[in-house]
Length: 275
Image (cartoon, rainbow, N blue to C red; front, side, top):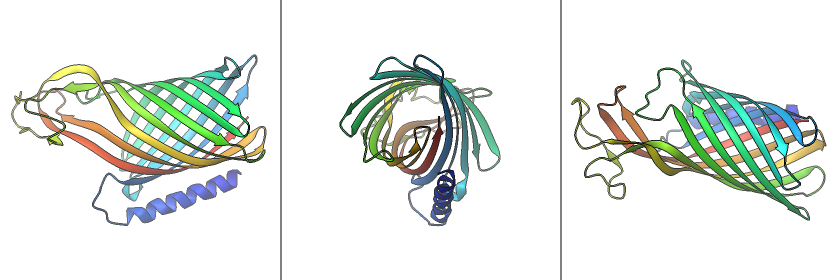
């Protein structure tokens, strides 16, 4: 299974390279690939520990790469409910030279129900992401708080094959809230004051209390189980992002641009899990 997963990932990266050569009028449309490897070990009485490494690449000419190294613990409350706590160190490389780091803490609550060959699951996740270093806190908070809700439906064909589909919603809970004068999201898609005047009138920061739906994700894939301790998932995900992109100087006195950025991104991925 591992050799097959590597083959699928190479094919995905080849497609991304071909896509990078195709001109498009929509810069927000991107294609990406993911590959991950997880090790999970039961401890006792419903407890388990796990570790995972995930690599991502996306964008034209593969100018975006990310590595997520994570570890955590899970606990099964009952037959139907499970919780998990995970820490992740994210390393992002853009244009091959711009490297940045983030730290993330996830808390999950998962409910699942089986009936016949069908399995339904709902995962609620609170996600806290810390941006260390010299971050521009006028564009985003140093500690971002997001909420995710994912519904997934799987069908057991036999002991080996389990196709599934799902959808996920992502909300930002503490994004910067700006109040420009004479600005209406329903009438204008962007606001660009002259950026060379300090204290440009027409906008103000009200704090970090903006709550928005910023991503809708649909997914489909198949899980292939070699045995009870080894499985592989091959999947595709389509993301639709809609977020307010704020660009200011570092002191927050000049608003360079305020743009609603929306677009689609298609991911192809492979995930391997060992128990």
